[in-house]
Amino acid sequence: MLFSELAGYYEKLEAVSSRLAMVDILADLLNKAGKEEVSKVIYITQGVLAPPFEGVEFGMAEKLVEESIAMATGFTKAEVERTYRSKGDMGATAMELRSKSKLKRMSSHSYTVMEVYEHMLKMATTAGHGSKDIKIKMLANLIAAATPVEAKYLAKYPLDELRMGVGDATVLEALSKAATGDRKLKGELENAYNLCSDLGLVGEKLMNGGEQAVRNFRISVFRPIRPALAERLPTAEQILEKMHGIASVEQKYDGFRCQVHKDGRKVRIFSRRLENTTEMFPDLVDAAIQEIGAGSIILDGEAIAFNEDTGEFRPFQETIKRKRKHGIEEKAASLPLHLFAFDILYLNGEDYMKEPYKRRREELEKLLKGNHIIVPSNRIVTTVSKELEGFFERSIEGGLEGIVAKDLESKYKPGAREFSWIKMKRSYKGELSDTIDLVIIGYYRGRGMRSEFQFGGLLGAVYNEKRDLFESVSRIGSGFSEAQMVELREKLDRIKTKAKPARVDSVVEPDFWVTPKYVITVRADEITKSPTHTCGKEKQHDGSEVGYALRFPRLVGEETIRSDKGPEEASTTEEIIEMYNLQKRVKVEG
Ligand code: AMP
Image 1: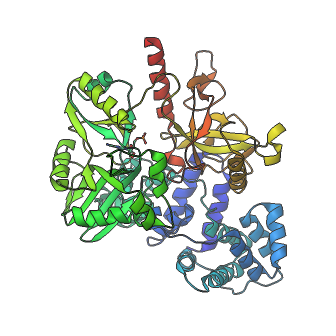
Image 2: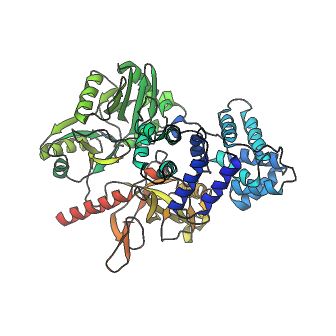
Image 3: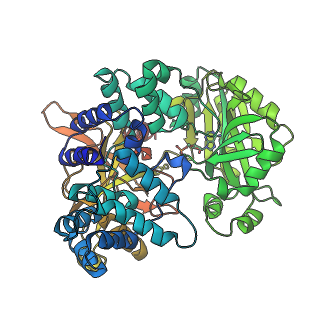
């Protein structure tokens, strides 16, 4: 496939305003792509070079791309910058200057998708002395040989601005449609994706080996598995009832989710978002080598900073200081972590995910016996709600967040939030005790006191998994520091869109729409029914539609933008409805 054809599809994708239309266009694109091109087409369409866990990044800032455009079109750097300032978008800048350029297209060669991909990969992985100039030149070579429309996407790709608003679920649906004509294979594809976190690989398997290859998909060490998530309930009684009278109740640690993969002396650690965080945790890597006897293994757990002298857990604000790029070794020494392993997914060639929790747990305890750093999570097994409550209270007293109860008979459910794991946190009374993660879908211009920051607040959405859409749930106008307002304005300005993005459902109109990309954490007093927001909306008897909204939301959290969550990892519509129902029950009882 020629890159110009791919660019043509992107033009179509950008022009549609519904998700279903996106699926159709993508399915068509995936069918037209050659078998060896499918995975690359998927990566490019999501704006990446490889699945996120491989950590391949372009390392190109705007200035470099501007230089490439200048070199390829013959305009001066100042002219490129001026155009960029007026257009506000590097793709549009490249397109316009390419078409106005007096320099002829440098060669008559039309690049294929494969060639562009390989060129880009080489460019991204060029490192060391002089690499900046090499990158500029490499991108310039591509743009110089491109048509204006191709130039647009070539300039956006290295800046992480290519993501066509296509989410994972949309790609999976399009793959199913491409292979079978409808969505019937989506479940199987999702399952394969949950086991490897690599959409390109899933696409490649499907298009080369057919449905059978997707059904036979197996986990493997060093490919992260999408983590299981927990549901929530407010009382010990309800938890025990849901678990048929008996539960394993584990302490809930508030730190970093760590999926540890080990084969011999090679260790990789993945975050909840499946990024490779191995470099951040040299102490855990050492411990994995020293303390885990098994040859090859995949463990799931939570790492938390720990005071060696007093035996106390440290709060999240302390633990998060381990998240850094420099001074890693020093911080590891002053703020040592313990990894509380709570699951085992794979051991010496055997897939453990299908085994019941109680067998997995037994194996885990056997394997980690006598360890100091990588230890099993603390837990009790109980049938008595008073006992569960007591364990919960002691966990809170010990500085932890609460508990996670686990169904003894359940399998490990990758990528799913189900009742086989149920969390209970401090209290669901009064203000909502759980924070909510929102995707930013728009923002407001600053008026009055905030006009100097040109920032007046955000429009936030939750993720509706069934619809694979973002539904508005609240405006957020408080909790921002001045520095945060500046940061948000700058970041959001770059991802402004002219119209409402195809995967956004909102009747509220912000001053500016943005591509759903950034996740923030808010705390709210209450969830209310609302005719204004589309989150969980339902038709009423009188034909009007009512959804849910947050009351008094304010920005909280250690980071302004959550670096560990992508838009599809924000709170879901279902969670909001659940939290609404929990809160109602507490009110009636209280
Ligand atoms: P939440 O982020 O509030 O939805 O809670 C789920 C998270 O709790 C998981 O993603 C883990 O990172 C963390 N967690 C801490 N302790 C445990 C545990 N014992 N079992 C399962 N998850 C845990």
